Length: 362
Ligand SMILES: *Cc1c(COP(=O)(O)O)cnc(C)c1O
Image 1 (cartoon, rainbow, N blue to C red):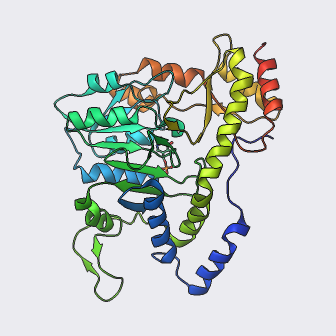
Image 2 (cartoon, rainbow, N blue to C red):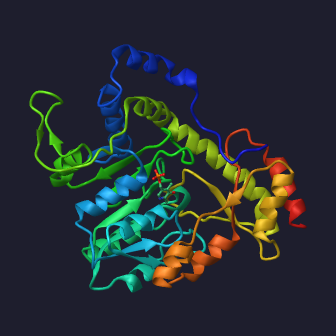
């Protein structure tokens, strides 16, 4: 089976640090966590970084920081994994779905403008499949409207727009380290922020509301949660972050080779801006009109090739459709017509593309 993804980490790479960790007996709140946190700040260029258990808990906590609750609205990119809207829903606020570009798959500026109401308290814009194209413009609109912008960069570690890495474009940025992303710690996430006044708040809330050192001197100055990443996870993360730029370059080569073969047959790749570095978390195409996407996925499976849909039209999920009845057309179209293809160095591109072209009668 040709798999969709391959993890960029091996046991050999973490063995020495893992052994040191076991010898020390420190599995949480140790040197690796602090180092990984500093690495994330240094890599993204963000002044402040925090580690978390997932992008979902990270997004949820950012909304908490903004005191989002009942009666509030948060504009969200509609073409995304449902976690993006679930966190809004969980806090009793209303996710207002903004439609996306059929080319970049990201939030349309005009859809954002149209979705803003007197109740709007924040915006969550997604770097779909790691693509930050247009995020700078969304950030400008949010600044002009005095709306805080949370970037759901769950897929986007390693990407940048206009020389700004994901992590420094929005007011708050959330990353995921789930195995389906480029950098994985099993589960895990991170938050970057600009505002120095929020640093202590995030430190406290991520760790039971505590301030100070463990043991003597620890004081619970607030209530909080435990959304901490652990030492083994930090070891895994650090190893991959060092290689990330090389991985991104490699994936762009693979993307280019796919586009050369598939574009002439009418497969349209996700578009990126000229000033964008795209990490290619997922390699996604819109299939030509003559092709039944679901059938193509099934046929590729017969050839031993794993593929999948793009992602979800959140406004069309059973839950959100029943609750808000506000399906966004472009997002719905993308849910029906996009396909994700195997992407990593060494994948047999010729074989996959030959199979696709044959199955789609080209
Ligand atoms: C994967 C993903 C999430 C959820 O990330 P977790 O770390 O699994 O919580 C949220 N938003 C988007 C856009 C994602 O792709």
